[in-house]
Length: 180
Image (cartoon, rainbow, N blue to C red):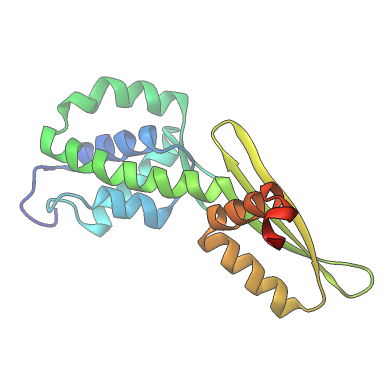
């Protein structure tokens, strides 16, 4: 074991990994599982890595081809049984970190930008903004250069609500008001 924390053995590390993967809203990569698990000084990298692999081997977690970990029904059942054995302070710290990750994951799934090359050599930039109810905005723009497409995508990803607000403002503003 790494240091002097509340987590004392590999079984508790497995409980913690199950606790975490039960609460994240989407499958997550190795680094995210690692960051969320290292919330206690008693956990070392090699013990964590071994425990994560064991949970995949035993069918508590799955590892997709693109390197994302998700919990199985077996893992959920065992997590529910064992989570109360985790120290309360560790669970609180995990819950705080998980809520931050879940916000980022939700945001990533709600704001998307993609670029596609057209037959004539121009580019189509597709910008999507969703909320919990569904699509808020789907916008396709044609640009003549790839670097322009990249800039549009990056700016949209940084502040999609700003673009949405400006589009709404432009569409709802009466032309006669602007001319006065």
